[in-house]
Length: 433
Image (cartoon, rainbow, N blue to C red; front, top):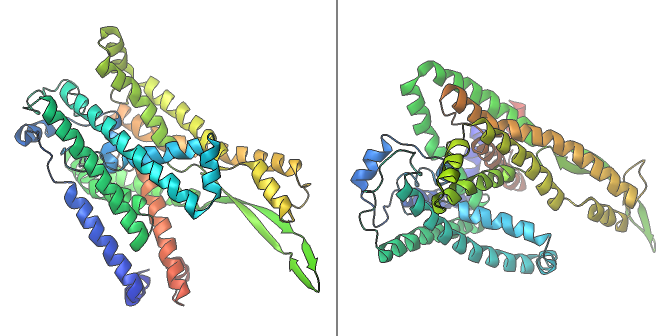
């Protein structure tokens, strides 16, 4: 593997892409420590020693690399863009115009990308306003904390300035991600999320080591086992054989041969976890706006902190639901069966047309059931550990999936580019060793 990295740096084009990606990541990390106006950072340092992020703030904090706890320029992270992208993907299956654009290829995708940017800015404005509400109510850093002195100037102009600054930070992150995608290695947004998570993990493990060493070594062993297991499952797929009939055009024969249709075990990726966490945050946000003491007590008991059994059960149910929902809108068995029939393909033993669609739907349901169970276990495991042992497990849920998924995707892209230049790839080198 190290020889493959050395070979990658020997290729000028790959070396420039890698160095450019590292340069953008350095800018991204620098923006995670730039303070925003209107915050008393002496008070913030005192709060950080006694409180912790809760609710959706935990998820945003993971994707911002700790910028949220520091209330820095990139405090919102890439979450608004992720949410906007997911919303547009869902709308493609509902709005015919968006579906038509998607089928147009690069031109239509460019239009959808432009709409995604506008939705991202709108969501960033809403999320920045919600962040200010969470700061003032003391829910961002933990309940029972006095955060009234954190924002000395509570005037409307200062609030608007803070909202615009946070929104501008999200726009800059979106631009940096697109630069990596166009001129660097891998998917830009995924690389930025990966860098944010990796930057926050060492501090979390150091804090765990200082507080409880036996638990630290136990978590280290569990983390290694989980990483191996996630790599195994993420690489797993059901390969459905597809046979293509030969076509005679004049004196030439076209087509023929056997290929396969791959169906991943985890067809939805990390999206169900993000959707479930976002929905569970809505009661917390509503409680901070609606002045109803009974409703606020209900939300504080069941939905604040993420350790109550009701919260864990609802989180698991939502994760399973979104696994099936997202798999249904991203893979349409009828469309796949129709395209297969038009190109002269068929599954051995299955008649083309509707029987093929029913067979694909049957296989997809079974695969998604296994993937939903696997994803649910990863999602609720850190919450169960936190509820029973009062210890936060850093490597779990969305964190583990993103780190492993982005690492595998980036290595595969580097391997493909090395193979184009007749170099050995990362995975092949490992297999030989």
